[in-house]
Length: 577
Image (cartoon, rainbow, N blue to C red; front, side):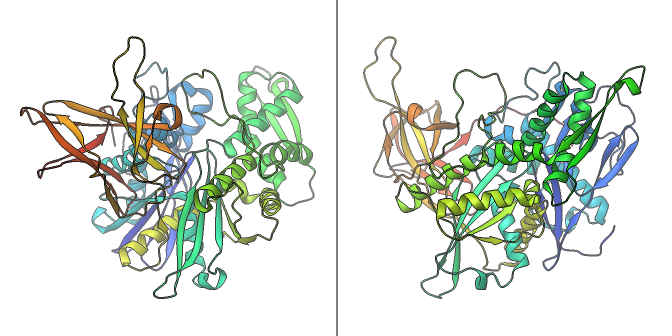
């Protein structure tokens, strides 16, 4: 595949379980197939690129069309991870949000890589694959947009941006995944303003392989022009819950029915349950799907088992287990107690409970009510919703909560809408067209301040939280708390904790016990080089730019100096791109 197009605008879905890439010339958008290793001396080209890294110790002379010694990524890395999980890194994107500086996998016997380093490898592979497939060099790439979960905090967004820059992407754009899916719908529906009207609201329900992501978009009218305006007003928590959970649950359920399986038999089962799930969740008359389980042994026949997965099995486990009928007040079960080092997977698999909780919180934040937000439309995204029965169940639940109708906006490509929408969004930005969903800060952010009190042995002073960015602040906003002055001492390394909350707050709101009532997000720090006598009076400034990036600085109250607060991250090692 080659192209003579000199303007290439790229959209990348940097997914938890799979990644993909699309290109736009400003008028048309299409997917780009990604060459990747499928064996020691085999390659395959596919639109989906598994987001998997495998630490290669034994395979020599690996090659790709653009690299004679590539890192082991993609399909083969995913397959090898089944048998050697201790040498694999999966779900790197989710680690960006929780432990961006932790070397993965946890407790590995080898040095490991950070989530940022692995993300750099994925993005580098995708960009080189694009150049190989199209013949377009870096000079022919106008803009690259990369998707992130709507729930990503500022640190995770910064790490994603840094990974992109390390992969050779100049000035990357970031776009939230549910918004990208909505932009794909807009691209397929140029008459969207005839399908939506003032007062409508769209729930974007995105359930992929590794995560579930919810967003709300409302339609209003511009007071001056009378044109329709789109605003993203709410996003959900980062939920590590998706199709991968369903596949694993089905594998364990079948193992329980069959009896104990050896290690290799269970791996064989894991590799097949996804196809069984997709087949039996699709419309059809076949009551069962056959699975042949092979193991390792001297006798092939003695090691081969056959299972029939029924539609009843799927309905009970997937539909009722992950999408149960629940009322509007349902809440997911939360974890408690100590956990081993790892990603904070959801303890309650009921996606409909998480959705009800999201809509209730959205109502509190946007309408000041403790009821449930009632969307007028819903847009599904993610491979999970290729099963009509799962769309139907979500629609039934939301209608029951709404006590009204719900219109479904048709998504023509549930697997790739995010990728295509990211490219469309970037093309709109490049062209300067007005059509754009306005976004605002999805959470309130706070700087941690130590309480000024007498020191008491054995009692740690409480950390107060000062709101420096209120939820709902629009992109492009800047704030300063000039009425609240602080003192800095020259020659010191200054650090603060950054906290967040899903509750709406006003600029300058003070929370008395931030560590108890808020969520710790990251640390911010800077070095004060001034060695003059006495404290330096400063106040805080916050900039929430048009890309959704949060910047916090301290400005001298009576002078021109200012100090940027930077997210504290561990130094990265050199990696092979």
